[in-house]
Image 1 (cartoon, rainbow, N blue to C red):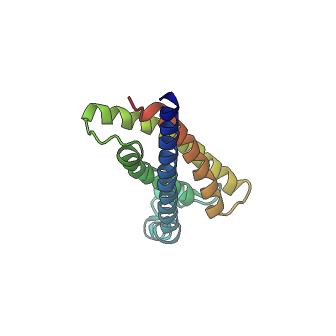
Image 2 (cartoon, rainbow, N blue to C red; image 1 turned 30 degrees about the vertical axis):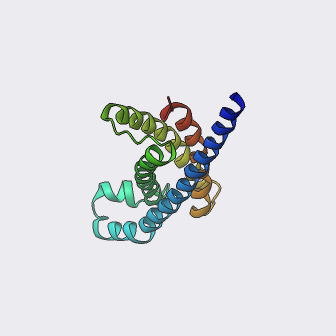
Image 3 (cartoon, one colour; image 1 turned 90 degrees about the horizontal axis):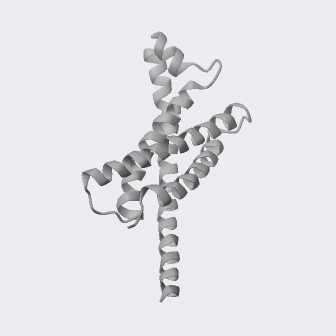
Length: 164
């Protein structure tokens, strides 16, 4: 009987990992789409049309010291994908279908707290790879996001979506 529970638990973890990382791949694609849209469309248009404003020129359009459009695009992309991923993780991966405001709020705050930690990890890795190792955006983004999602799965499974 105990052996059957162990097998069932391992199968459940495998299913969660497959779903979690499948959604992570989808979020990497979405993140890539958002960052490339920022790089090719939004940043050039914003800098061209609003670059005369000092705040926008310094904190969004500047590439003098660091590539600020890339950094801002990365922050926006990660933020959007974490919200989408929370919804998928809660209701599909960890099968927490009950929507109770208190429970969901607590889960979201824990999820968001760990998202901040892994976002700093993600953006830091991408920033270092792009600016100091001169790695292309696409490669640094995939490496950083992959490391971030592995870290996030371990944290979410243990601390956020605790199955009672």
